[in-house]
Image (cartoon, rainbow, N blue to C red; front, side, top):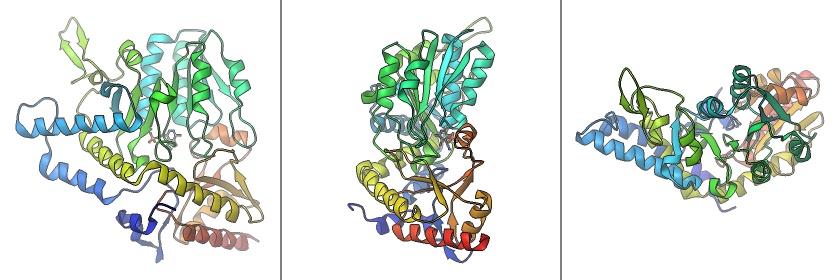
Length: 406
Ligand code: PMP
C-alpha cells in the first residue's frame, strides 16, 4: 500500500466526528464524497478575500478572480487531457451537463424516426433527458442489455446500431454495480459509423485516470462533488467541432456576442454555454480538489480502493444470506448487496444506528433494479479514506441486522 490512509483521514475534518456516539463510518461516497480542508479553505478564501463577479469588470478583484476561474478551467483540461481549454464547459453538475447535450445536440441533429442508444445500467440522469428528447422529436430510445454479472452485452450493442442512430450515451462506471465499462470499445464501435458518444463519468472520475483524448469520446461529463470538490459545479467536456455546431442550452448574459431586438449572436466557446453568473467559487474549489487528488495520485487511489473492494467482497461476501449485486470482472469500489428476507430500508436504518452511512434504495436506477428483479439494494461505496477496519464494522453490523430479523 503506497498511501498513508491515517494521514489522509486528517485532511477530512468531517471524518473525525461521532454519530450516535460512535465513530462515523462513511460509506456513501457514491452519492457524494467528503471534502478535504484544502477545498474548504479555498472557498473561504474566495469569499473572504477575492469575491467579485467575473468576466465583466475592469477592476482589480474582478480581473484577478476571472483569471482564477479560467485557471480552474485549465486545471480541469489537463486533468482529463482535453485538447483545448474552451472544450471545458462548467455546469452545475453531471445532470445539467447531460441535459445540455440532450437538448442542444437534440435540437441540431435528432429528427423524427431517429434513434438514441443508452444502456440498462444508466442513472436516471442519463435516461430521462434522452427520453424527453425522444418525446419531443418522435425519436426512439434503444437499450443495451447486460448480463447477470452486470456487464454490457457488446454483441447486442452492435446489433442496435443502425443508420438511424444519432448518439450513444453510456456511463463509464455504474453507480449501483461498480462495473467499469469498456468505453474505448463502445466508442470505437460507434465511430465506425460516425456516431458520437457521450460518456457519463460521474462514477469514474474519482476512481481512475480519465483521458478524453485516448478514449476519443465526443462528450464526457462529471460532477465536482463526487470528486472531493464542492457541490453545484460540474463539467461538460465536448469536442470543439460538436460544441461549435450545436445551439446554446441556456440563454442570457455572458453567452452573447451582440444583442438587439432584431437578432442575437452568440459568444465563442466555452462562454456560449455558460449563461449568467457562473459558480466561480465552486469552480475554483474544484480545481483545489483536483490538485489534491493529483498529489495523492489516481494510480495510488485506484490500487488502494481495489484492495478495499477485494477485502469487502471476500469478507462481506462470505455472509450467508447476503447476495452481491454486480459481480463484473472489472469493478471500482462499489459494493451493492441485498439481504435475504430483510428489506434494504430496514437494514440501512439499523446499520445507520451503528454509525455507518450506507445508501439504500433504487439509487436513481429503476430500470436496473427491474433487470435484477429487486426493489432496491444496500450500497457501500468506498473511498481512499476508508479502511479495512471500517469494513469489519460493516460486517458486524450486517450480522446484527440478520440476528434481529432471525
Ligand atoms: N450519473 C451517475 C452514474 C451518477 O452516479 C450520478 C449521481 N448519483 C449522476 C449521473 C448525477 O449526478 P449529479 O446528481 O451530481 O448531477
